[in-house]
Amino acid sequence: MKRNLSPTDAAREAQRLFSRLVFRDLSGPQALEAAVLASTREGIRGSNFHDFLYARTAEAFGATSLVTLNLVDFRKMTNLQLEHPVQPFPPTP
Image (cartoon, rainbow, N blue to C red; front, side, top):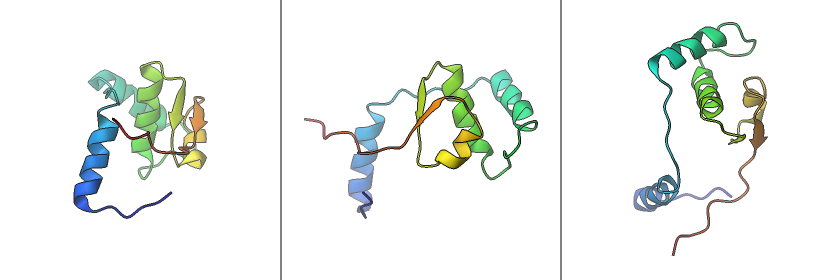
């Protein structure tokens, strides 16, 4: 469900969501390896290269699925199970 949030409410929602996530980054060599791999894959262009890096990061850190609204592009990039977000996280107490 799309909602128009005020900047204050958007910041609050971001804080709530981010507090439940673990952020990971590819190392320099891993990012370079991903760039080289992207150059050999059909359908990966400059406009979706960042999505490819997200997929490679998820794979590198052992994710079993990836949650995205962009199922079409991610199907070209990874063999991870793709999940469409159904609902936001429940409110925190």
